[in-house]
Amino acid sequence: MKKKNLFRCIALLFIVVMLVAACAPADTPAEVDPADPAAPADTPAPAPGEDPPPAVATEGTREFVAPPPGHWDQPFSETVRITAVAPHGTNWHFRDGDDVNNNPWTRLYLDRLNVEVVFDWTTVDGYAERLNMAILARDLPDVWNIGADSDSRLFNQLQADGMLLDLTDAYRTYASQRIQDFEITDPYTIQNFMVGGRVYGLPRLYYGQIDQPWHMWVRKDWYEAAGSPEIRTVADLEDLMRAFMTDQGAAYGIGVNDNLQWLLRTAPMWGAYIGNIHNNEYFWMPDATGRLRPGISFPEFEVALENWARWFSEGFISPEFMMMGEWGGRAQEDIVNGVVGMHAWWQWWGWYSGPAIVDNLNNNDAYFIPFNMPTVDGAQPARGQIFYPNFDVLVANADFQNPAAWMRVLSLVDHMIFSPDADLTADELEYYMLHGMEHAMAFPFKIIDPQTDMLQYIHVLHALETGDTSELFTTGMQFKHRDSLAWINGQESHGLGAYLQMGFDGSAYARSQHLFDIGRVVTTAMWGVAPEEFAEAGTTGDILMEEIMAIIMGIRPASDWPQILEQWYAQGGQIKEDAVNLHFGR
Image (cartoon, rainbow, N blue to C red; front, top):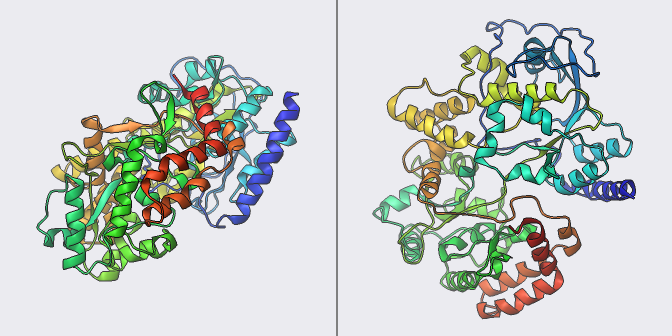
C-alpha cells in the first residue's frame, strides 16, 4: 500500500511540476539569493594564469569503507565514490577543461578526503520531474536534494516507503561540530525531517533570519528636502507621503503592486502579521487560547484594512495599483522613474532598483534608504516578521553504504565557505569561488550557516569603519566590502546593493539587527513547509484577494471582513488551520 501511495504521490507531483515548468522562465538560475556569500579552503590554488590540474583517474568504491578515526578532515584509506544528481544553475561557470565531475571542488574532495564525487546527471531545467522519474524507476544516486516546494510530501512518502537512509548515527558521529551546532541557532528546522526521533534528512537551512524583516524604503533626496523628519508613527509616515506629493510632484504616496505583497507587509504597523495571500502563504500565530490561527483572522487585520482604504481614498495608493506588476512592471517602473518616493520591500533594495534609479535619473542622491516600519503610537518600531526560511532537504538512498564520507564532504564545504578558520589566500578564494563556482557544489553538498548574513553585516561594517579587513574571512564579506567602497568612494551604482544592505549604521541589516536586539520580531508558528492537507484545501488565497482589493478601493467596508473570513474558512481555510494545529501546535 505504501508503494502505491508513493507512486500516486509522485505521479501527481510530476503532473504539477510539468505544468509549472511549462510556465517558468527558461533562464532561471537554480539558486538566486542577493544576500548570498561564499568563502574559505586550504588546498593550494594554482598560481594566477596557471592551468588547473588534470583530472585524477580513480576507481572509487561504493562499497562500505570504514571511516578513519579522528577529526572530520581525516582521509579515507580507500577512495570512496559518492554519486549525486543536481539542478544545474545557469550561474555555474567552469574553467576551460573543467566540468561538473572535474573542478576545484571535486578535486579538493579527492585530495583532502579521498572521496570521489560523481554526478549521474545535472539539469538546468526540469530537475523535479527528472528526479521524480528516477524515483519511479528506482534509479537513485547515493545523495540528492528535495526542493523546498515539495520537500514535505515527497520526503514523507520516500521515508515511509523505506527509500531514505537513517542518517542519525553518521550525522552525530561524523559531521563537523560546526554543522551540528547549527541546531543551536535553529533547533526546530531539522525536526521536520525526523521520524521517531531519527534523522532522515538534513535541511540546507538559510543565510540568516536577519534577511527577513521588511523595511519602509524612502527616497533619500526627497526625504532630506523635507527636513529628514523622524518616522516613528504612522502619522509621521503619512505626513512624509503628503510632502512628497506636494513638494516633489509624486503622483501618489506609497508603491503598491498588483498582488498586494508590498502593502500586506506594512500590516505590522497596526499589529497585524500577514503572509503573501496571493500564493496562499499565511502567517500563523497562537490566539488567547493557544490555538494557531492565520494573521488574517485577528482583529488587527481589519484595522489595517480600514487604514489602507483610507490611504486609497486620500490618494496615497495609486488608483491603478491592481494593474501594476512588480518585476519590470509598472510598480517598479514608477520607483525608477521618480513617480513615487516610498514603498515597503526586502533588505536587498539596492540590487532591486538602486542602480536603475540612480542611472536613470542621473542623480546619485535619488536612491531609497531604509527605515523600520513605524507604529501608531511610535513607542517602538513595528515587529519584523520571520517566516520559515529553509531552502531544501538533503537525503540519501537507503542503500548508500558510506554516509560518513558524505558527512565529511559536507563538513569540508562548510569549512571552506563559512568557517573563519579556513584562512584562504586571495588566489584560493578566486580559485574556489569565482563566478559562483561554490554554487556548483551546493546540491547536495552544502549546508548553509544560518548566521551567515548577520556575520557578514558585523564584519563588513567593522572593516568599513576601521579600515581593518583582516576579519573578512568569506568571499561574501569581501564582495560586500568591495562593493560598499565602490559606492562610498566612487559613487559606482553597482555598489548600492551592498552599501544599503550593510554598509553604514542606518543600513537595512542595521535596522533588522536592531529589531532582534530589542525583541521586536514575531515568528510564524508553522516552522516548516505547508502540511499535505493544504493541497486538499485548494488555493484559498483566491477567495480573499478580490475582497481585500474591493475593501481598499471602498467598494466594500472593512467591517465586512468577518463575513469574508467565514467564507474563507468554509472553502478550505478550516482545513488549513486544523492541519497547522495538528502538525505544529506545541
